[in-house]
Every structure is written in structure tokens, then in C-alpha cells.
View 1 (cartoon, rainbow, N blue to C red):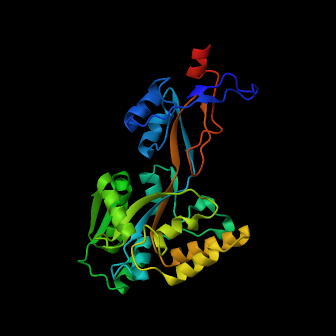
View 2: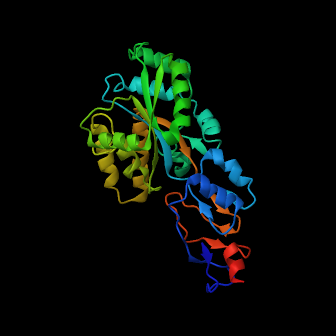
View 3: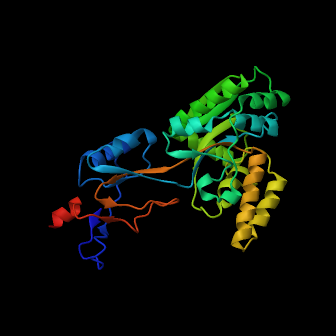
Amino acid sequence: MQANPNYWNTARGARLEKVVFLNDVSQTAAIEKVCYAEGEVDIVTNISPTDAGRVANSPHAKLVNANAMRVVAGIINRTSDLLDDARVRRALNHSINRERLVENGLLGYGEPSAGLTPIWTTSLLSRLSPYKHEPEKAKKLFEEAGWQSDRRLKLATANERENLARMVASDISNALGIGVDVIVFSDTEKLSELRKLAEKKVAPDWDVFVYGWSGQTTDAPPLELHYHFVGANGALRAGDPIADFENLYDEFTQQTNLLMQAKKAYDIDKFVYDEALALFLCSPQALYAVNREVDFTPYATTFELAECEVGKNHWSRKVMG
């Protein structure tokens, strides 16, 4: 990016005159350029937690992190009779140590999930608590539902979520005393699997798909998030539509009063939570590697540069003299 030396508000500083988006640079190379060079890359998006420390300790870059409309959850395949039992789904949720997922899987850059809605978007009056990590309770529910100990669980995921999926598999196996097979899809396989899931012509051959979702609305998450996972036309729904959910969703979409809309959004989140219609895991933060001379404000939903400006020691201002 290049500074605008003629920006009208000189007291505020140099806004941007030009921004070039580079889509032909690998993530590894981009991180290298923003951390250890100047004049080639100023911002790198989608930094992984494992690269966060390297960015923060580099000579030319800083780490910018922000809460975002991002959720990692397990799509539960309710086309299976066993997984169509709420006791099994609750057992799976009670198996998960979410604090460990955040601490070891996200290296602290995120928070545990309570339902599908990220906790940071909710008020104290409309906030659910994460399912407790209670292995004994999980196993009791599991056995009550009649899951056979020799029936292995198939846990699918994609490359970018493999580390979290393997932690989830370990928690489930340890809590429920069953074998868990982890299936890792390539990028191409992931797209094919999501297409099949959206078309709903063939039942999935996995039990749970650990999936990373991101959306565009923070004030009414059920419009996208819950509907994708549970709604009759939801692209991520794996199982029959649920009449009670559809009724709640219809009531929600008819609201014009913001307070009532928030109340109905909570009702939907609580219904999905109570019925354990997903495996609630964690909400990762958005991480960016940013040139130390760039003032960048992150947004919860999209990547925006409207408020971005550069300092007096930015390379572009040095070039301009």
C-alpha cells in the first residue's frame, strides 16, 4: 500500500492512495516478506496461531488480533439413527475440553463455544454457558442411547482444521471409550463433500465433520449461522428438517423490533444448544500480520481498509521524500 501525501486532513496523517492485492504469493512467502522486509507486503490475512509468535517477535511486523464471526463446530450427521438421538449428541458435547482446544489448538487466540453464536457477540443476559467437560456424564448418556462399544465414530475434517479435529477425536475417545477414525479431506475433497452435503441426495459417510464457518452478520447470527447448520435449506444440514426450528426461525425473521429480534435470536441459539444440533467447539480470532508503520483496524466480518493509514516512517513515505 502507498500513502496519499495530499490527504486533506494533514493533522490526522497519510491515508492511502494505492492498495495492491497480491493473490499469487504463498502464505509462507507473504509472512516472510511482511516480517523481514519492507516495501513488498504490508498486511497478511489469515495468520495461523502457530505463526502468531513469529509475527509478534519480528523486526518489521506486529500481530493484530480481533474477535470475528468465525466458528469451528462439528456438523453432526443426523441421518444416522444413533446420531439422531439427542443423548448421543449431548454426550459428544460433554466429551470436549474446550478450554484445552483454545489453549493448545488456538494458542489462546479464541474462546470456547457455547452454542453456535460466538460468546463475544452476546450480552450477559442472553449468554449460554459452554457444555461442561464431564466425561462420566457423557459416557452415561452414550450408554443410555445404546451406542455399541465396537461402533467406531468417523470424524471428518479438512487440512486447515486437522489439529483441532485430532484433539476433539482424543477427547471423544477418552470420554466415551470408543475408537475414533479421523478422515482429513484435501481442499478438493472438502469442496466435493460440501457440495454433496448441500445437495442432500446422498447421506454423508462420516458421523461428525469439524468445519470452520465464517459469516457477515454480528447482530443477527441465526440468519446465516444457525440456518446453514439446521435450516430446511441449510447448506450444512445433515439430517431431516426440524419443525420446531423452522417455527422459531420464521418468528425471528418477522421481527422489526431490535430487542425482540435479539430475544428470538437467543431462543434459536438455545434450542440448537439444548438439542445439541452441532458439536460446539470454539470461536477463533482473526489474526493479521501488519507492518509496524501501518495503522490497521480489523473488522469482525470483512477485511476493510477504510480506516487504514500509514505512519511517517512507512516505506512509501520515505520514497516520496
